[in-house]
Image 1 (cartoon, helix red, strand yellow):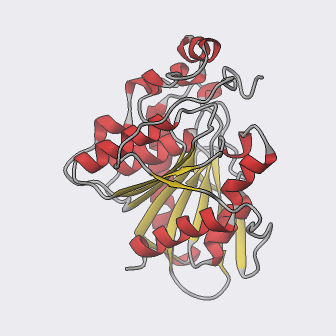
Image 2 (image 1 turned 120 degrees about the horizontal axis):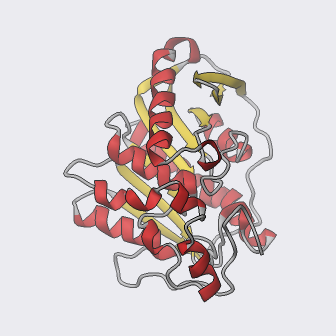
Image 3 (image 1 turned 60 degrees about the vertical axis):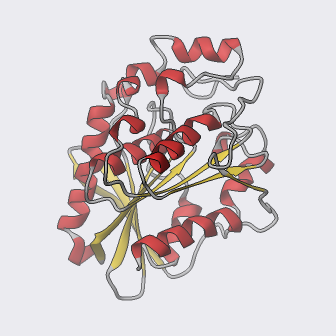
Length: 290
């Protein structure tokens, strides 16, 4: 089944890594979902921050200066819709955060990861420059992304010193091995030169290669039935961060798929559950409010 250009579901799940440091397995209660809309938040739409790029900003309505969370949407480097995951973003904003959802340039615009990272840096700079009017405390900044956005969040966190915390949802860490463990057709699609990952030149820049002596704190989550990005991808990043002395926590969600592109609605609902979103909120509280 086609998803985005160059993407398919694998007919089989890929095995994850094993060992005590691979991840924390959890079973998610999908019966408790976050609200579709949150009271007490204000939305600013379409703020121009870098050429024609736009971002949306959610902030609490009550007065204050709030820690900044920059959300990076997924889309296989072929799309980057800033309207993605609004309930999740509103949930975090209502907890006391300024949550920006930023577009970034994609392969359809001839972009590579170089332009993507430049766009993210420009978004953070714009928000910092307008911090007073937008009620932001730019000294407390996190990046949060899913899939392609998770990859870019990890890259941004490891290359931009302004980022102190990273939330990576089922992003990739070694894109030269993105098809490992999947069926032969999926592996062939991932290796094709026209695959968006190849066109984005993301195989030339993997987050693991940018881990240094000082890294931000990471929260990483992946589903063990993800048919698009193998769970071993985020586990490899988690292990590399831990080996370098970094603070990283990895959760492996039993039966979960690739976010809203999961094989079933029940799989997708894991990512909008009160349980998973509270894990993300508690992580941000611990590292942006202390």
